[in-house]
Image (cartoon, rainbow, N blue to C red; front, side, top):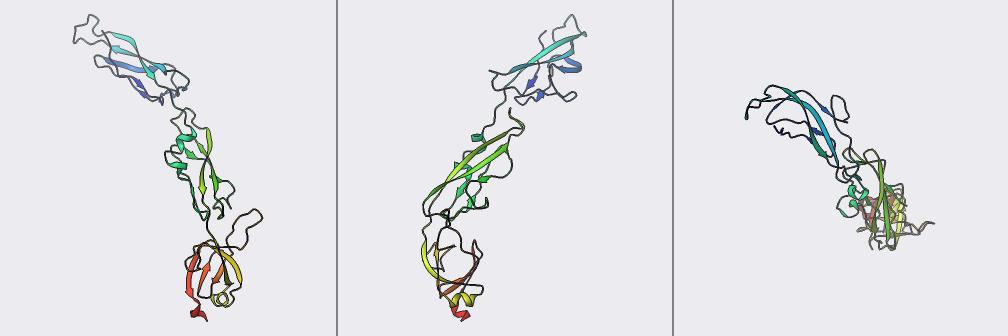
Length: 257
C-alpha cells in the first residue's frame, strides 16, 4: 500500500509532524538529524544550497483492513517520509531600511533630525549622525550639505545570519537656510533686552516676531552656524525669550518700558 502523509519542514526548520490518511501511526516519530530533543526542529539551511535539503521522518504504522483488505492487516511496519526544507534567506542592510527613501531619515533647514526607521531587525546601539552636534541636531548652513546616519542592527531569528550585526548608512540633503543680519537687544530680563538694541545677530526671517530661530553673528571655526545663547531678545518692538534652541514667549516692549 502507499502511505500518504503531510510531513513538512519550513524554511525556519519548523516541523509539521506526519499524519497518515490511510493508516495509524504507532509510537514516537523520529526526525533524522534533527535538533531540540523532545521539541525537535531542524537547523536553517544555507542559501548557498541550491534548492534546500530533504528531511526524513521515521515512524511505525499499523496496517488497516480497509479499504483493500490488505493481507498484512494489523501488522506494524516501519516507514519513512521525506520533506524538502527550503533554504533560509540572508538579511541585508537594504532590507531593514524598507522602501521609504533614506529609511525616513531627514534633516530640515534648521538641522532638526527625523531619525531613520528600521524594519525586521533590532537597532543595535544608537544611530550615529556624522558631524552632528551632540548626536542630536545639525547646525544650520548657508550651503546645502549631505548628512549621514550610520545604523547598526542585530539580525533576528528567522534569517540564516541570525545573531549577527549588519551595518550601513543612509543620507539626506540638508538645504541651506536664508539668514538676515539684524541688530537686537539681549538681556536677562525683558526690560533690559528692550533697552539696548546694539548687538548683531542673524535670524531666519527679516523680523524677530516671525523668526523661528536666532543665530550668532559669526560662524564658528568649523564654519558652522550656531544658535545664540539663551535669554531675552528684542528689536525694540517685540521681546521674545530664546531657550538656546527655540522661542517660548513673545511680548511687546511697550509693556515693559
